[in-house]
Image (cartoon, rainbow, N blue to C red; front, top):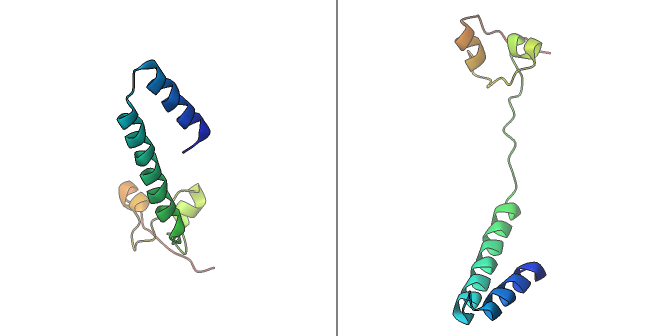
Length: 85
């Protein structure tokens, strides 16, 4: 737990707004949150990039989903063409 968080908990405990039991529970909860965050960041991220954008998306600089007829072309009712580079 950060020094600011422990300072806040100490002030609340002294003022009577927070009991000692609540303070220790809050500290344990913060430690559990930190452990779960570390687990998420330790796993490698896999990039979800489309290998190539269709001509329309490339021309308009839109995000292409890489399907045979991408969502942008389907929405506009135009032919979706891919040209190898």
